[in-house]
Image (cartoon, rainbow, N blue to C red; front, side, top):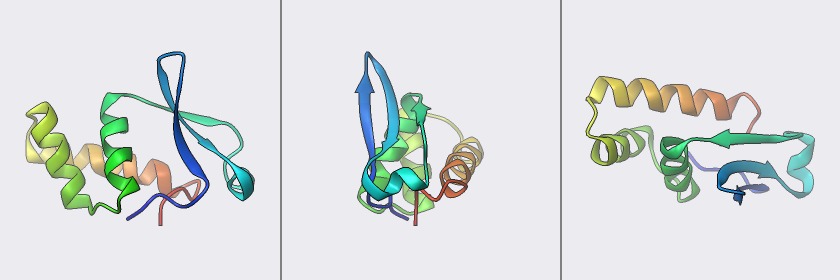
Length: 87
């Protein structure tokens, strides 16, 4: 999976958000706030990570169980699929 062109991560006063630029504004009008784990996953997706790689990144960073990491990754990925942010 990979972030589609036109979606970028920005720091707005200490809050990390995803915004759309160019043609992507037709898909996302507004912004999505990300927490720390969301930022970790986003950065992995920028380089085309698989769900297993995302799971492993969360497990390594936060020392959580595989089941919890899988659930968190699935929720995050689904939240990006809805507005068409990942391919």
